[in-house]
Length: 211
Image (cartoon, one colour):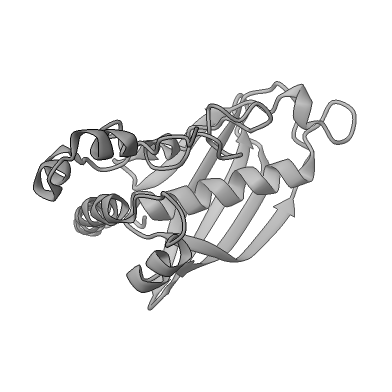
């Protein structure tokens, strides 16, 4: 059975089909995304709760700062060197976090470039803080940065920066035309998220805070 898509805790895709909801009714139900699971499918390696081998991170949006920021622990299953997290898993974590951030701000993106710097080994089962933010938007490119700090000391362990391709509606429709992906609902979520992103940028600018 195909996994239902759920957007922002409202109107799962299979519910739209079953109840034959009108587009206006669907739109009224849609709210800005708060977590990665609000828009992604349940088998996603980064955030999907049904993926038994996944990372299971939530990637929550911090509206006050316009960032994705959350505590996290790397489990034993993602071990590289004895007692420490695998570098590839850390790259996946920060790639996903930065990509979800772009979605929270109203952009559906694909990774263009991802740069990683490993300052110190990340210990397993130790709480760390993941943080990422947008640094620049240029036409159809977004630029982001991300860090992993040891939670109890604030020590910098990993830093990353990425460049993203902001997909057009035409590209998205072509990409998902042979799938059950609910593209029209997705576009509505993106519109709501984009309005929120503009409000956050305006507020931070008035406060003279760099997002």
